Image 1 (cartoon, rainbow, N blue to C red):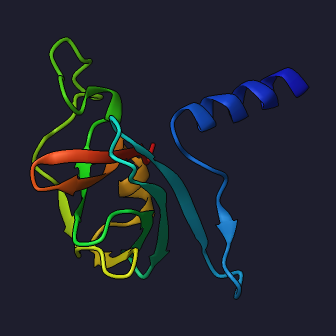
Image 2: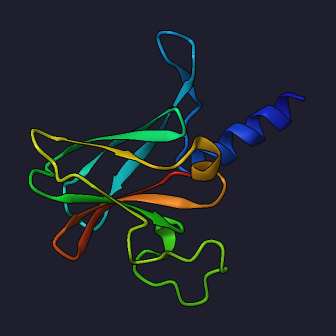
Image 3: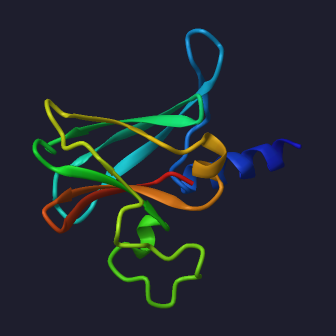
Amino acid sequence: MKKLLLATTIAGLSLGLSAPTMAEDDQYEAYQASVDERGDSGVSGTAIFDPENGQMTVVVNAENAEGMSVGIHRGVCRYAEDSEGAPENLAFNKQPEFQCTPFQDGQSMTTIDISIEELMGQPRSVVIYDGNTITACGNIQ
């Protein structure tokens, strides 16, 4: 049983997910994903997904991302630059499914119309851009 729990934990971490955390009022869970630097951009951070009433508040905190934009994409970061040969369900879609607000004071906060079940129902990524260049990426699931 311990080996299964360890393997499950490692699998979750390798996808960029962390365990859900309970909100203060214990009414719902918030989920967190790491957003990792791409290339030598110096941009990295954390995305928090807070579901409520069929919507999701997405808060992305990042260093060195002032004025950059954030998007939620279908697919995983591994295929962000090149989806050729990627399994269909993991291939990265370069068009954001949801566009988030640009960073101000190291934070982007946006409410999107998606439930936690839909968000976690297929592989998605949170991506930070400087123009058309991906500076950081994190797998949501």
